Length: 351
Image 1 (cartoon, rainbow, N blue to C red):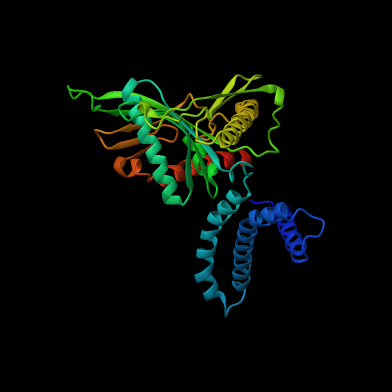
Image 2: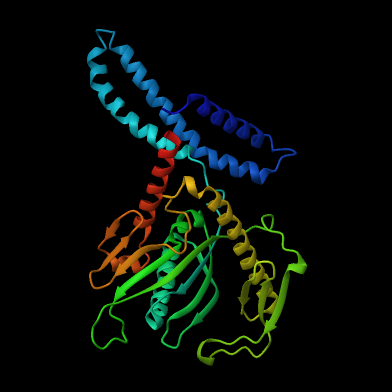
């Protein structure tokens, strides 16, 4: 059962925000109020729908005492009562605590794991899969750093993804992705297993991380493209080392000034993520089953090409549509992971 006093508090807060914004929000942070207002709107709409259903049930039960209305009430009441569990569940979902980072852009990092050249080729396949997924959702996929192999694989890819609720959707992708297929370089037709690691980090804001000037060392160096192509003859590439943590970030765009901006943003994002990981580890004993835990050493998914099969090991989901998945059709997977995560949180709340 949903606590009614909590519903009243949320509705009252929404009405207050509505009134303040209508008056021009004098002396208030209009951006923060506007965001809170837009976040609460779907919750308040769900509350209204739930209250209406409860009211309709009460009205139908009262009609049962009226001989003239009893037949109509007998027709309506079963359907109304049957709808109540779903309405309560939907309302509980909207009341779940939100991850403050869900609405943020994300930094995507992909690197080959075990498997040599084949792992690098698979890493490149994952980069293209996420590029296509971003296109489908109308997000912007900007490559910050890309190191390729001579065979067309990827040694490392760092990309910035911007759009609506990027981290909320992408956070479940962190972990080890395993591939089983016959490599192009394999003459005997044997299936090989290799892997690539994916890390999804919520982008940091300036207010999140303050980096002291004495904590970083900035080096400039000559940038070069893959295979000696597109060699940049100026010392424009920037490498920033964060001395307290040893984190190193490189950006190799044509503009040195732009490289400093990019590298600092990536560094802030990694430091912000490290702090989130620290806080997560402190809470991990109570949420070991969370699918969005961000444990990047965990093998989360297998892509079996001979069988056209994708298996997500966290929720025992298997789909025989690998071609569509590699083409960026991964919403079904992310929806299932989101639902499982929400179910876990609901069980903890109601437990």
